Amino acid sequence: MAIISNGFRMFVAGLVLFGPAAATAQSYPAKPVRIIVPFPAAGGTDLMARTIAEKIGAALGQQFLVDNRTGAGGALGTDLVAKSAPDGYTLLVSSSSPMVIGPNLMQKPPYDPLRSFSPIIIISSAPNVLVIHPSLPVKNVQELITLARQRPGQLNYASNGAGTLSHLTGELFSQRTGIKMTHVPYRGAPPAVIDTVAGNVSLLFSAYPTVSVQIESKRLRALAVTGSKRASIAPELPSIAETLPGFESSQWWGMFGPAGMTSEAVNRLNAAAQQALTLADVRKRLAADAAEPIGGSAAESEKFLREDYEKWRKVIRDAGVKEN
Image (cartoon, rainbow, N blue to C red; front, top):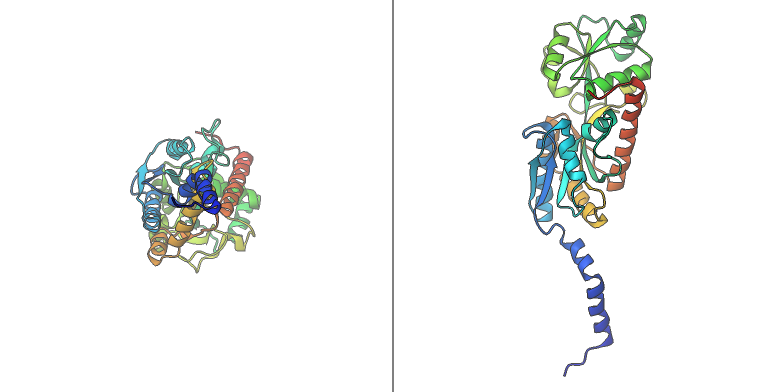
């Protein structure tokens, strides 16, 4: 009969007590993972999700499948993830709108962005660009501020719609400078751009790819980008922060899981995503949307989310913007 040592008995007992938890941590993901995108296929968020999902899947040896669940400005798909089991097999890749803007506009949001999710990583961000009709007699941000102060309420700015980032960037700009401009909301970016080119409105805060052709053809004049620093897609343009220190308004994309995910699963996903953001083809894909990688730890991503949420909460409250 074989003699079993006390040490071996302790090892076996350890497997019984701690083995399942350890195995779970080491084996995640043990089956395909679903990534909810709360916007339509082929849109910016969808392409962002598919780019990162492919790389994370390769790194972790499992399929990461994108599932588009649209509706309510992204709230339906986002809420689906908020109410999913925190086992790491249902994740969310979303833009900033359903996470920091939409909930601040709703009377009764179905989820709490700061409590309903486990932040995994902020993938990337893209600033807007401030463009004006060429007839406006200004050449830089400071001259625009001066003109707006001389003509309170007379300068009109277009947006993609009430409560959109293009609208709220204009509100943030007005609040920071103390100027008064008249907001003209449109149903989406195309009509907003068309009317700005036509001179029916004076200026617009827009995603750079949306107005790049008009900038190149000089039908619109770009004054600055809205990020905290200059953008690699247009390094010749100053940031508004060079005139207004601390000014920042960017669309961003992040990956989240339901609240309560294990730190092991979150950290594995974060590490795989961080690795993906170093790859040349991923950076090239982001650049096509004027986006730049952010990355950072899960804790840093949670801090980023909280700060951006509070910033837009204040802008929306002070501007008196309500849910449509």
